[in-house]
Amino acid sequence: MSEGIDARGIDVTLGGRKVLDGFDLQVPPGRVTGLLGPSGTGKSTLLRALVRFIDIDAGTITLDGTDIEALDARELRCRVGLVAQTPVMLPGTVADNLRYGVPDLTAEDLARALADADLAPSFADRVAGDLSGGERARVALARALTRGPQLLLLDEPTAALDHDTAEHIGATLRRLRDSGLGVCVTTHDLAFADAWVDRRVDLERGR
Amino acid sequence: MSRDILLKAIAGVGFTAIAVALSLRHRLGSAREIAIAAARAFVQLAAVGALIALVFELPGLAFAFVGAMVATAAVTSGSRLRGLPGARVRALVSIALPALAATLALLALGAFAFTPRAAVPTAGILIGGAMAATTLTGRRLLESLQDEIPEIETRLALGDAARTALAPAVRRAVHTGLIPVIDQTRSVGLVTLPGTFVGLILGGATPAQAAATQLVVLLALVAVELSAGLLLAELTQRAVILPGERVQRIAVQR
Image 1 (tube, each protein chain N blue to C red):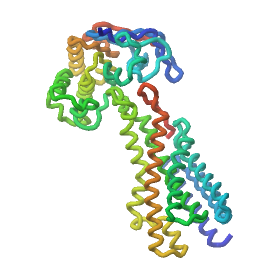
Image 2: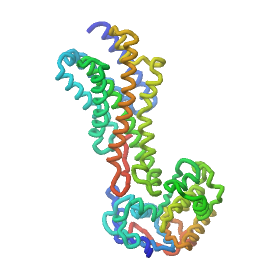
Image 3: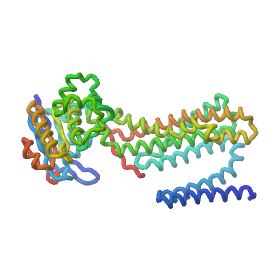
Image 4: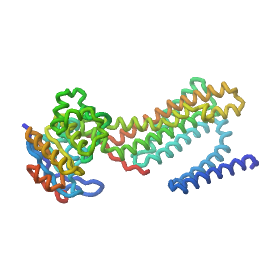
């Protein structure tokens, strides 16, 4: 049974500074969890810890009841997709990006991932490096979805996007939630959180 | 000191002054480094000039001399790779293994006489090439590990193993390390007349003998520099790949 992520008592120190201090977070399936707080409060650090990009000093993080330290890191990252704040487009077309690491992705799966991220099928042949910021954000979302994750972590997905594009992203996240995906989104945009987030976790000074 | 040597020394000082002045004029921040490198070259060549006759006569001293060359190359390259844990040791392995193996192979194949007079300069050329490739490859890879972490972590987040995620950066770095020797090989005889060729001609060898010797040295250099770059890339990956398919960030001193 899917329980999602359960992080308890998380301490993280980076460069001698305690970024997270005894922080708790649950990311259940079928909900959009908003991780709120101003810049520098450790939102990105927490997401990075959830996919084991950084070590935690104390606490436990489980995925469906299993400590993530006991999971193969690659398996963990396929089950928990991470979309960075500034999405990096890999060389090639949008289709190449979506097929990265999933070479046997079918045309139907590719089309579904594009549709899930609110992108037209014609996007598949666009050169990824030529896309705008908003398009990159959606391609990064589609790319994460092609791995069939059960949870999706998005770091400030609407930063530097205009209001309409941010609304598109919000609506996309809601659709994904309705399909059963657990979503965790960091944001300092309170209006976006009010409109699209089901449950809010405030991350003020790492607690 | 003969007039000829004095004139050459004065010319060397003049060229150094030009390089230092250009660096200062364009605020490159390398004027001091150029001056120190030139001073070191002056002292080192003077010392070698005094020692080399002895080195050529005593095999034991020749081995020690090659050892000193390797150690100096490792320290020089390692100092360019600050930020990489154990940089000097990793540079030492990357330089010594291919350069010394190629020297032994050339001597064993009879390409050069098995004498200190032939072995020491050959080892020096190959050690110097390996040092350049190690430094260039390492610098490029460390810069990637600092500047391209978002791309590397994107690949990790998409399920890549750390080695797979690093592969594009490694390929770019090894390619960068090879550029000088490939360009040198491509342009030999057209743009440059390399040291071995010139030295042999001045020493009385026929042009055909000099060309054949230069060719084997140049092609050995390509293999040595590629091996040095690959070794350094491998040793760097071992240093930065952490358990759990993670990559350690590196702070490069530029």
